[in-house]
Length: 251
Image (cartoon, helix red, strand yellow):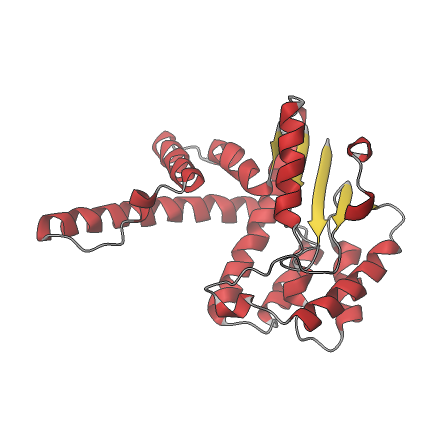
């Protein structure tokens, strides 16, 4: 099984390049998964309650389709408001079931040393409490996705994701003085992909996020890119492919 991740500054074209590779592999009848898709496909099987299993399937179906009616935000007449309240209550229940399953697998299968390092980096990161909660959930999802991959190796041929443990260093190192020291410790314990595709350090198009803290300073991101890449290059067990040198035969 191939596990391919990307490393690059926000706006460098990771997602577009990933989608191009996925589409080409699809034409060759090779099914690929992202970490998110692994969770959508295999996490429900961890739920022993058949009712909760189907609720999780519904949750992932609507999340995958980005079905707007699933998120009912508008205010209507009293009857519709009541319906909306019931729907929001059901949505919260489903999300709670999702988080419970996520937490149960995470607690049983986490890499204790790596988890301790990462959770501490999140706590000490230069972001708001609300964003730290988001980063914690992302980390748990990536740990759980890796567990589910290992559990279903005979069913999975190809993982390709524009995000991953290495990419998260742009968050953990942001505005930190001891970047090299932190990155060395983190990468020493970090689960590595089979292949890491490294993007150019130039930005093609910067996306403007509604979450203002995600609109990070380019010069700071460039420092993180250079420090991290220098350490990654010293890892002889990691196959690094630069975007400009990419060939499908390398996969």
